[in-house]
Length: 456
Image (cartoon, rainbow, N blue to C red; front, side, top):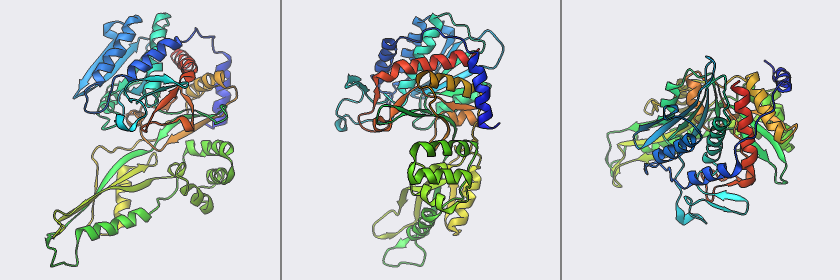
């Protein structure tokens, strides 16, 4: 279905939309966010189950029964599931988010990363943006819906993973268990961009992600004394292969998301890059547009598969010929392209049988999700309640979130975060991560609107 047609359908659905009850209380949501930040859910600290128990307490206080909440330990981490039961037999919708955060060294931060601090209009702390902001908004909204006595037709299931930032073992477990869901709404994707002038610029509706895949290049030799060099040297052979991979560019591609979204982004950013995006959307073989986009780190990932060397290991002694040399190639594969297809292409580019190309066994490809009219309608209503007429751009992420594994299981998944922020305020994974306090109230209204509309 053409995007214009989807918006026509959306408009009709919006016209019939009911007025909603008041969303969750801002101070309550702020407390949940601060309490979440204070629990350092970094890999290896075993704190994710503690955060899961905290969220369970919030929901039980709102009226959820013990049987509505399931916390499953997986190693030192855990998964969390909370169900607001529906009145019908339709497939449930699931909400996605993750409880874990990346490591943060207090010595490098202006403030302790795990002591939430509110000042200058922001809440500072690791995870304040990624992903505890929207997780806290979802928890608060689920609690408020229960307090209101809201009876959805479709069950709403809040699913939180515990190692999204690392191995995604918990994500795979959740995706396998809840693969019968109608669709997923992810608070760790999409969201609104605010310009430096404080005015909203556009909202990104994430409906696709590139496949994350690691490949290992390996060269092995008999080795020997360094005083007796031979024509074959594992490090040299590997270096030659890496130079070829580094210079290689995969054939540009586009899909429904990039073809529709790029012209809208182009109008927002303007200038030479805007012209290039618009030209590529019209003709993905436009060499000038391709060159301009590839030169821009912000957009290079939108036009095809990318592969880059990220780790190198080789040799065993300073005075010995290397017996083994390896390198990791990290690829972000365009949706719909098989992992094996990329492995075979790398092998062809390297063109050296001495260099073995091995695939990470956990790598699996997923395609983009279709732009469902009901999801587009609900997102349009929620976004335009805050910013009337704001452009809504279907987008594809160059990174990977929990949605990736749900799409593999056949569950259409959409990044619909409630957070609107400036690009200059985004410090996810970085120093002094923060979230604007004034983003809380509209984010609560956003999630309340989405869940009431899509579960009826």
